[in-house]
Figure 1 (cartoon, protein in one colour):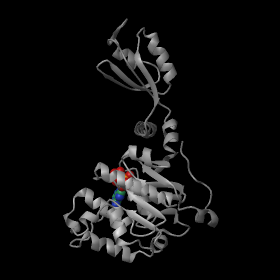
Figure 2 (cartoon, rainbow, N blue to C red):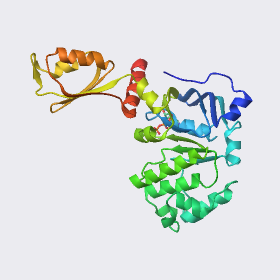
Figure 3 (tube, protein in one colour):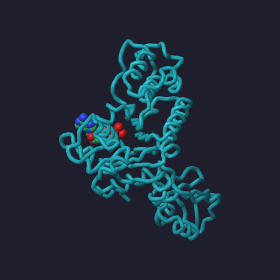
Figure 4 (cartoon, rainbow, N blue to C red):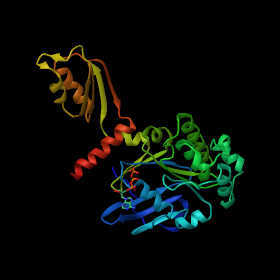
Length: 319
Ligand SMILES: Nc1ncnc2c1ncn2[C@@H]1O[C@H](COP(=O)(O)OP(=O)(O)OP(=O)(O)O)[C@@H](O)[C@H]1O
């Protein structure tokens, strides 16, 4: 299931990549946050970085941005070190941590970001794209959480970057802000920029990303399109209604739980939802119980369920 790039980085391969990690490891004391990570992001790709808490997502982004140095392995951004790429104005970032400056207005802060960028956009355009024109004269320390996120977004898009790195960018944004945010990101990707974002909102990853990377304990567990990740999880959802929860042998709940290949079961009223690693065999055995399921549906897992199935299987292996 794990896809890793194991070939040595040649100069031409490195320059064709927006980002390349080659066997990167980073530990904090005893904690190995990033463990032999190899990956390759191409220009124009929108890539979601998923993983449970502590999987190493922020550490990976910190290494990518040159905020931390790997213990071993190499990180290259457009064929150079991260810091060179940032100094050349090729990378915009929106991180979770780090306060905004106190006592300056949104416009002043965005103007400063534009002034510092080697290839800046016009301040008014940046404000408008990030949806902060209305609050441009407000002090940045007087903003709500969602407004603050929009300002961070404005700072990340103050100039023509070739790579945009976003750490949980829509946390705290309302529905319309999220929609506008992703529409802008889509435009950026359509213009050939690479966009890498870490998120816990799997529906965003499913809707937005061309490619999904699943990190777990600092390692790449899965790498593919959302559809591929869902298919790789192997399990399917089976749902049906029963007329009553008793069958020829009495209470059916235990019998349902005992159906072959069932990995999760939820009985709510007369509706039964289960996950099966072999839906055909499960449904066959269901009929053999002597019950008549109505409204039977068999479907693939959503990205969220696939993510849980993949990471839980890995936890079970480690246990
Ligand atoms: N500065 C640090 N000092 C010590 N340990 C750290 C430090 N930063 C991160 N860690 C540890 O490294 C591991 C990876 O953390 P990281 O923040 O990269 O994960 P994450 O996937 O971004 O998590 P979350 O989804 O919770 O934001 C965790 O076990 C974390 O506790």
